[in-house]
Length: 576
Ligand code: AMP
Figure 1 (cartoon, rainbow, N blue to C red):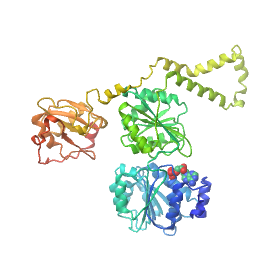
Figure 2 (cartoon, helix red, strand yellow):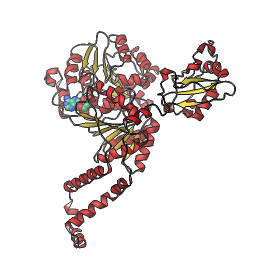
Figure 3 (cartoon, rainbow, N blue to C red):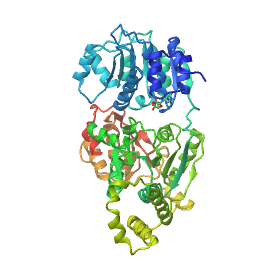
Figure 4 (cartoon, rainbow, N blue to C red):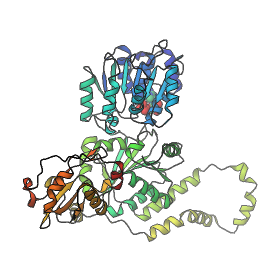
């Protein structure tokens, strides 16, 4: 392994990183630093957070900065404000002894005026979120004509967040001769497109094996009935008394609900999701960073900006549909040489996902039974006893009180005192678990029933729905489901809002991501026509015939596109 000096890192930067405690380059740094210092090749690096990628690009771009030219020379694009601040902070630390270098974070959600003023004073390195940068480019307050290096950090996340067009636009303002570095934890299709379009024979670097989860993370899963999911979560939290963890939920709503319940049940928990204001999110993140919060309940997007090295557990409250997300989640623990555990609480129908994720991360999950009440109490008890052993006693403070305390407890034996102290702490927990019913593990047979949704046949969008329409009715598929907040009432309202006249909506079957509804046959053509070209926010609505009785789709087809193209407002989204 080479040293930083051998990679060509300049003395002023050496001084700063040595002070930060960096002794040896991390693998991504060993690969990227000499490349970026030496020539201008484009680089794609498949690297997860925590691999040291910020220093890998940060050190060389600082070193290559010509401080006598007061113009942006390096542009770092990243998906979130938090990451933007973090990168800018890291670069500022690495450049502590580089005179006159100016690094500016530029991100949405904060005063644009102060960013404009800073840009006018002159900067060398801009770290930006795409939206705000475009705003500044449009106001002509920033010129990118001297940029020689562009870094796209967490490129996959930027694509996920819909920044593709913004990135296109920004890159249009940067000289073609620039070199480009792309960091991504995963390599979805969109990234391949970007690399083809903007990169010239890029060098590919993979840090760790492709898509492999962190080495020192154990993966555990618990299978429960859907109704027991929250109770299982509580037991798991109780089973790990010193947990310092992130609980990932799928939606903002679920995140808030779970956090609320945990708080109500006396856990040290709080929520982090996009419905909170920036100030609220900052507050929660700081609380978690400072370890003043044990359990952070978060959505994937909101947790992205959080960089905490010593998370002990990641809890997946259900598994994500996109397995790359699982890799991201589990990569939040087991960092910086520590070990970590990634837990998934799933229902039987998610078991298939476990196998698929195992393939992706090349690691096995351990299946565990939900901890029984007595075992949890025992674990908590020993943890408490351990704490008693290790507690730091402030002799000076309590010394004067001790004689009277001794006098008061004089009549008790040592064993009695121990029992009382322990009871004081544990009666509540023991009572709870004595009264609580054990969580029943789903049986294989019942799992099949559950998979079938109790309706005899699994709903599958590709099978055009499980059932035929009621007589006289046509059955439709719609790509809105419970996850979008759909319920029978608002779905009926939604249909009637879009179709002229009053439509009698028959049977409705709500699925997670999509639904089926039935309307009288004579209205089928109208439905097809009215939903053409409708968008809910940025999502194109798909409404299609969905049953074998009505497979003669021509019968209802209306080839004329609807005249009116609805661009649905947020109101619609909210209602659904
Ligand atoms: P990153 O992947 O850039 O978020 O970095 C992960 C963590 O590793 C950060 O806390 C860095 O400060 C730290 N780090 C980066 N490079 C080194 C190094 N060579 N030696 C020790 N720690 C490092």
